[in-house]
Length: 202
Image (cartoon, rainbow, N blue to C red; front, side, top):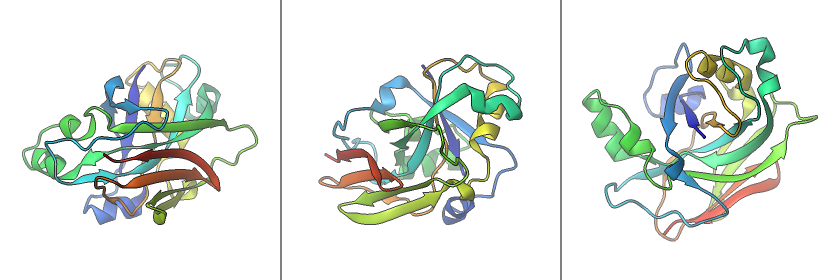
């Protein structure tokens, strides 16, 4: 099982971090040890003083595919969920300044909390609201209409380089509003009004 993530897929988020809007999807990966399921607590890593939340819609691959044409990409996923792409922002900045990969800042243990999934049958994928609350306060809010690259474009692009297999996950990017978390914070993620994700920071 592979975990792919898409960076800078919402232009306002790219702007808030001072990044250029990309011409193609920015792809990176996390190991399976980054997954945090069933509402398990997230423990802040000792190597960072600035861990940021990034709420993201997650699609789950249910059919093996390679070199998938964009027009057929919708046949390769049938569920959507919600996850958090935790980022050690201070470590990421240090790595980027040296031209090094981001994995240490993005793929550490527990850095990919994952909530529940729902069927996409009858869902307008171009108009999905999702949000994150921290301690009951709305901190991130997005809609798939704001995505630079659609789900189908992302699936097609990744499949040109990696064979997609059943169970692979794709975190599809975060909207503006990312921010730091601290011990004691309670995070709740929603698709529309449906709570899909909930856990605490320790």
